[in-house]
Image 1 (cartoon, protein in one colour):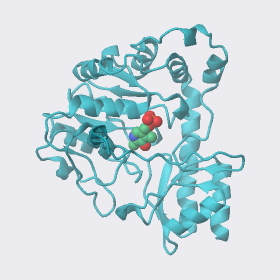
Image 2: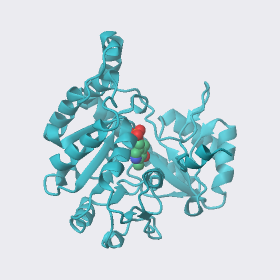
Image 3: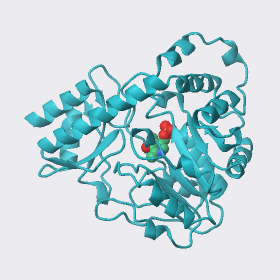
Image 4: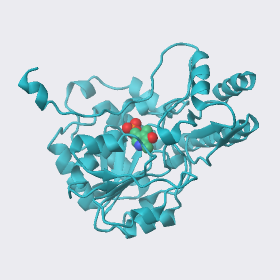
Length: 349
Ligand SMILES: *Cc1c(COP(=O)(O)O)cnc(C)c1O
């Protein structure tokens, strides 16, 4: 073994869900939106000029930042954009969690948090969720180097009410609190309304789920100008051109069609509420999800067995297998037809 091999950064990478290909596949494993993006997005894509590819993109992604500021009634200096919310979250870890004290996030949550902490050498502690998978905010009222929670949480689907998020932020005004709202459009109340009052609060959202644009990689953060400036300084110290020009243009386009957005989110929420009942009839129990997925467990059949049986039928759901999650499956809400095909198989199984 050569010496250089000792100096390779040793990291435990995040494992994304499978991306199987094929005609008959029913894909309910990575929380993608089953519907197309807004019609205006596809139109703008077709009309895109090659000039958009030849030149470097606008490093400040002004068009999209402006559109988001307008959309939410915020200032441009309160918005940061990145290559999916993963990029935004990673950048936020790098920017804000430098005290050397452990940051806090729940034991069951988005499994990328411990990966970024590992990559950047940030110590962390993981307060356990209660028996019903709820976040106990009293666990976050102790000395720490920062806090990150997903709200609604993944893979549980549960949501903290806004008052509790505020209580958590108020109890931690000496550190940055990140609220990852990847699923907020499907239920629950955004903490965005609090950013004017708490300079330490960063709210992160994405176009990947509710806007059907996971493939375009668009995420954003909303927070005080101090936080946004700090994020931009770190971004410009690493890669000025994180957002490609088509993403900037198409993301901006997506925000214009509020009607379409509302109707697609409604369709998914309706399918989800029906899915809660159907799973119940099939002997499953599920958490009260506010997202575009359900976290389900069957009264008799082990989750792993069901995962494998579904997979043989080309129906892909997510199985984590971690100690606290081994009895559960996470099932993305698809179209009514996809869901019917799944219920049909589960019934016969
Ligand atoms: C999907 C997801 C993300 C990342 O989404 P991007 O596609 O990178 O925007 C972040 N946090 C949670 C909790 C998610 O489920």
